[in-house]
Amino acid sequence: MFEEIKEMVSMRDAADRYGISVSRGGFACCPFHEEKTASLKIYDKSFYCFGCGAGGDVISFVAKLFSLGNSQAALRINEDFGLCLSTKRAPAASLEYQRRRRQQEREKQKFREEYLSKCRRFRSLNKELETAKDFRRAEIMAEIEYLDYYFENTCWR
Ligand SMILES: [Zn+2]
Image (cartoon, rainbow, N blue to C red):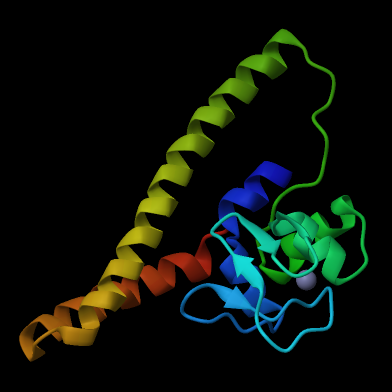
């Protein structure tokens, strides 16, 4: 679950979600020590505070922010971002189980590639929309609507 979360939720997403405003340069005021100038650097997958030395990934960030253990933080992110990740552990392996599992893994992989490519498409469409001319706008809006529908009805797994 940890790896999936780190893949799904960027540090920037977490900062936004938990009310930490990040500047254009990726700096924010550190919530872990008192400061007036932003010295917390938000990278894509990690953070580091040049003021107090706090650092880590998205899970340890949320853990620190809410004084949680890493597992609890992962559960919290799972819930707050509606990731629908399963927390169940795999039962003991049998051959049949392993075969099914590999099949599921392949399907999951395929699903994820599609989902992530739709995410990328969604972002690029939104970007294109900013400067698109009228005739193209309608096309973009239609595709965005379709993707919206997809994301609303599709849970990451
Ligand atoms: Zn700090």
